[in-house]
Every structure is written in C-alpha cells, then in structure tokens.
Length: 173
Length: 419
Image 1: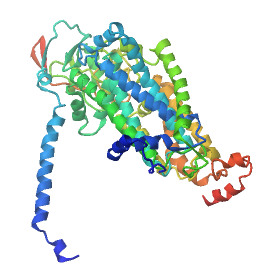
Image 2: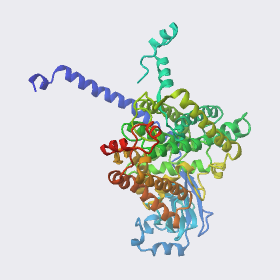
Image 3: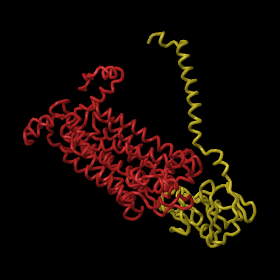
C-alpha cells in the first residue's frame, strides 16, 4: 500500500461527515414513520377503568373491558382458595403462589387479564381439567388461580395493575 | 436473446421505439422462444397473472364502498352484499379469488418441485416466487381481517400474537402492530392501508419474476438445457398464449362454479358474526391455504418453538436450490425422488387436514409425524437422495425421444454418465 492511500485527507473527512449526517437525517425521518404506529393519545387515555364489584356473588365472576381486553373479576369461595393454595409449586409450568396473585386480605378476589398467554384468545370459565379456565384455540388449561397447568401457554394469565378504592370498587390500570 | 434486431416498420413507431423501446419489449415477449413440450402444469403462471389482476380490479372496486372503521366495517360489507349494484358478485369474486389464487400458486410451486425448476440457473426466479408467496399470505391475512367478523378479529389476534413469542421485544412489537393494547380500530385501519399496498408490491415482484425467467428461459418437462431458438422451441405467441388461454378458461369455469354455486364453502360461518373482543369462537381455524402451517404451529407444545418451526417451514424453501444435490432437474428421470415427491404432497395435504381438526388425540400425533417428515424431506432426504440415486438416462434434446422413438437413449446415457 502506498503512503497516499493510508493518509486521511480532507475528502475522506467530508465523505464520512456527509454519510454520518445523512444517516442521522434519514433516521430522524424514519422514526416518526415507525412511531406513528404505536398506541396514540386516545388509546392511552383509556388506560384506567373503575369497576363496581358489589353485585358479584361468591363463586361467580364478571368480565369487564379494559384497554380493549377482557378482565376477569372472580369472587372465589373459601373452597376454591384452598384448592388454589394446596397446589404443589413443582406441578406448575410457571411457578407462582396463589398469594402473589391476589391482594393481601382480599384473597377471594382474583382480578386478571382474561387473555390466554399463548396467542391471545379469551379462555372459557369453569372449563378444563383444573376447575379454572380453558382456552378453546390451542387447548391451554388454567387452574382456579389462573395459572397455566397444561398446553402451549408459556405463562400464567397476567395480573393487571389494580387497587381497591373501597370494598365495592376496584380501579384497573 | 434473439430479438435485439427488432426494427419497427413505420417511421413513427421507430421514432418512439428509439426513445422508449416498448415495441422491442413487445416483440421480445411475442417471439420469446419457449420449449415446445411444455405441458398444462406450465399454464399456471398465466393463470396466476389473471388471479392477481382480478384481485386488484375487484379490490379497488370494493374499496369504493367499504369503510375501514371498527364500528362500520361489518355493516359496510353487508351494505356491499345487499345494496351496492352487483356488490355481492364483486365481493364473492374477491373472496373466492383469494382461494383460487392460492390453489393456482400451490400447483405452480409443486410443479416447480417436480420438474426441478428451482435449480441452477433458476434460483433467483424461485426466491422471487417465494417472496411473492409470502406477500400473498400477508395480503390474504390482512384482507380476511377487513370484514371485522369474529374470525377476522380472532384470526388477527392469534396471528399478531405470534410476534409476542419473540424474546424481550415481542410485546412491544405486538403493541406496535396493533396501535392499541389489543386488536382494535387502529389495527383495522392500518390493515386496510397495507392490504391495498401489498398487491402492488406483488405486481412489482411478478415483473422481476418474469424478467428473471426470461434470462435462462423456461424449464421444461424433461428438464434439460435447450438451444434457443431451435427445433426444440416455439415462439410464445401464438403457441403458448393459446394453450394458456385454454387452461385459463377451464380454470375460470371452476372459479365461477365457486362464485355462483357455493360462494361461502371456503369461508367460515362465524365470520358473519360481528367481532366481539369478549368472546373467542369455540373453534378457530385459518383459511384453508394456511392450514398446513397452522398444523405445524400447533404440533409444538411450546409457544416460541411452534412459531419458529412454522416460519422455518416456509423459509427452508428459500435454500431448497442448495439442499437438492441432484444435477438432474426433472423427476421424470429420478425414480427415487419421484416417490419422495409424492410422499411430500401427501404429507402437506395431511398437515392441511389435521390443521382444520382440533389439536388433540390422533390429530396431534399426525400433526407431529407430518411436521417431522416435512423437515426430514428437505434437510435429509433431498440431499441424500441426490447423492445416492441412479437416475434414468436423459435425452439429448426435446426432439430426440420423438425422432428416435424414445427407446434408443444410447447417446443420452453417455451424456448422463458425465452428469
């Protein structure tokens, strides 16, 4: 190699500088084009929902819509709670205690995203081999705590962020 | 190419052609030397062009009446069916047209597999064809969502959730695709936009596909290289155009049969129920042309594994020209490969069947066997058969079997040993 080829000259600097500035410019234009597809302000505004749970009898559940997805609110009987807590964690594909899935002192209330963690279908209640939910799409079974027991779903049904405003009202989101 | 000598007759035509050689292109397409032994399996290229144009024309018309909004889409499709003049006809042509498009493309792909059309020097034609096939599947999926029925909504939910299997960024990608926290109005809106775009991308790829085809010229049923033009070739027009036209007419009769007599037989009745984000239909299935891949997805008891295997089933086809070690193209002269070809056809049909059935019991077992065999065919059988197989003697030219009665392949055998 000759010395001239190795030497960085003004032209090389100009090329590199132009490419760099050009790449930044292209990136700055592309990003809005990509980001416009993310949830807009109107979608984000729907982020919280308040639910009246005073009418739910023990053993029954209601389904409410939150951010376009169903939320299962189930009031469990003492028997069901006991059943959920008697499960050996080694039997669970995604080990999690029932206590971690409910609010302390509100053990009867199971509030979870009613969406199968496999490919997003809505599981059917009181179905399946574990007295909980069953997803009709690809056959995942969930127990009375909403934990996956069998099938292709990788994780338990998700617990959304929620709080009790008072004894009869919860705020989801 | 044989037509660089083309000179237009009139002065005006010459003036124009010197500035934009469209007439030269026309002459090339007319005179294009084509193997004289092409059979009816070679007519599906023309049929597919017809399908694409049909979908574009009916689609543009439907878009004049359709409303891409979650509250109005379902009603606007019913409006097309009941109020728009001939709306029922145009919509049924469009919805059945998608199925006919896939029917033709599958025959086209399997023809290529049988006669070795994907092999050197036609790899780029094959890869462009697969890209067209991928875009077709995407366009068909996007279009299926637009009527916003139960199958539309839950099909969209399941397919977009496939991306959530990607580690770390999966959830963000899914939300980005949705434009919301579930499949919702923003999703429908963008799907309509993309559904309108994709056919034109396909059209562009089709031009490249045909361009790439016209470099080496058509493969043919005996799979040998031929001199062009020679006594082995005929001009594209009128010999191939008339054959393509006849095949197209037969195809259109079948197409019309679906449109006029059983327009809903390939669809699913649940899609006549408006989308409901709170209730998933008891048995959700994709359209028939995606069923083999659906069966592969469901055969794996792991989310990410299933998604990876399903996409691999398609992407493995991209390296097919390099997995097949045999130098003989046509299965006519490959006694062993020929049998495995038909086993693969049966395997894919079986996967399609079990994809439509519930994923349990014997169907799950069949899906797993079918999936394993599918990959075995491409990864193991194809490379090994190509090395071990003793191929039959191949003729020197297309004319030779005719001239010599086909029973004197002595010359050809010599040639074959060299191969």
